[in-house]
Image (cartoon, rainbow, N blue to C red; front, side, top):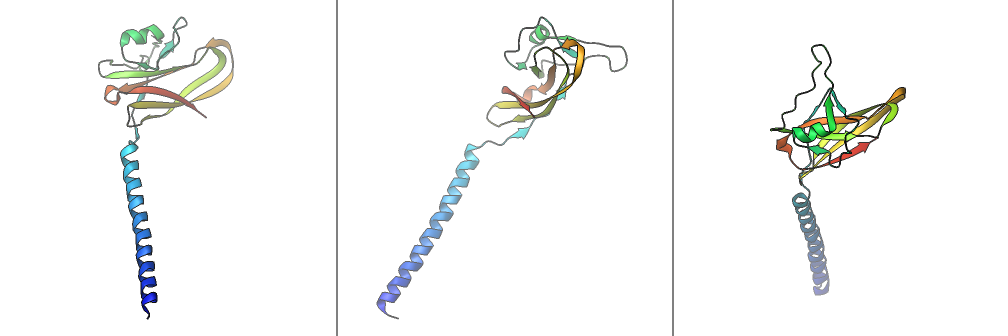
Length: 163
């Protein structure tokens, strides 16, 4: 083996090793940066508040998050009926808050159904819900959805209608 061949082989081996080493280092750095930048999303538990209705004279909901009984009563009334399950779902505003979604008045049977509530890990809760529209009715309704969430999941609230 000549000296030129030896140097060429050495340069080739060192060059390949350097390329592979940089790629591994770059990949490790990128993965490390992504794990520090992207907070972990997590599902948040909630309950649907039953037997409440949106008042006809209620102002529009400027913020979907309601964290006091006084504020809640500006928008919603209770719809108590007879029977074992006739009372509205209890809400303890000391330990809980609600997320409310309201749609405009309609004469179509309309139901708002929660899909998920996710904490993005950066201080934002997102409630995803879907709208199911039924048949025409002889009266109008103001469709609304109210979910109850523990205050341990505090954060800004966004609502997202999904298909």
